[in-house]
Image 1 (tube, rainbow, N blue to C red):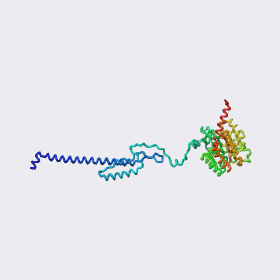
Image 2 (cartoon, one colour; image 1 turned 45 degrees about the horizontal axis):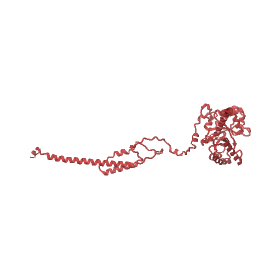
Image 3 (cartoon, rainbow, N blue to C red; image 1 turned 180 degrees about the vertical axis):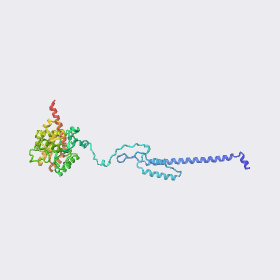
Image 4 (cartoon, rainbow, N blue to C red; image 1 turned 30 degrees about the vertical axis):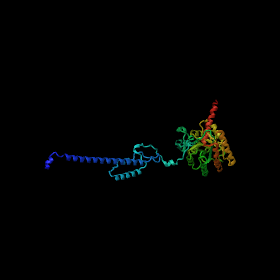
Length: 426
């Protein structure tokens, strides 16, 4: 009977029942998938919110702390999280993600796509040591920047600092390179002070360097001990240096200038050789100052040869005494390219306080009347003390202390204008 029943067409109810059951299973399965998808979306949204909450504000770029702009690995880690159906496991993974986020400093979202910045490589330790530069003295610092001075000198039989003739290198001469310039109002009265005994007393040298203006000019003799070392020291402290040129005086040999010197008793060839030896002793001088009562320069032949040698190398000539300054003026009238100058007053020729004060007064009066003046001093303790007090008063009066070369340039410019006016009064 069974067989006959199966063979019959009475399977319709069974098939219908089975179909309904399968449809119910499929429906339940679809609902389960939808539930799972909804749970996944919710979890990812929570993760996104956690990421956004952990992203902090990006710091300002500084040379000491440069933030990398490359995309962080954080986003990749989040995208590869395999979420399970179990909510507890999801919470554990979220906690692990939060720990990763807290370890990352100032992450940059990939969506920002920030290009890398070209920030210069700065040594912050050195930068911290740089003093603040004001607008007032920035031009001075640029002017005082040490230039390569190798081309000014050459190694010869006379020494390693033999001055090279200008025409041989075709660049700036020694006076131009070694001059120190102070940026001030051109119309302001100027006073130049020359310390003439540098290198003879370490105690006195230190006191002047430590306490007086760094615009004071230092005069160094080639015959002092360690002259080269002392010259480099003055140059490195950004002060102007001149060479004290030993030459014959009226009271020679009773008053010997010491060491190598230019003497009238020597032949012209001997003096020329001595001059090159003297000039090769040390570097960084802007010019030479001849000593004492320079009878040597009253000899026309000797003075002509010496001044010609100095002019060809761009070395300025300066006289301690005004009466020899007039001689230099006459020489300059013949040779227009000659750079020269002379002192107006010896401040401490006498150590009398009254006479020192009178010297200060005369220097001020000349500076206000003519635009500049030049004083020379030996550096006695009383002189150093008085100059220090005087510097403050000069500042209050608007009078500036400047290097020797700056006054010489001003005088040369003034003389050139006067000569042009004389040549063409109209």
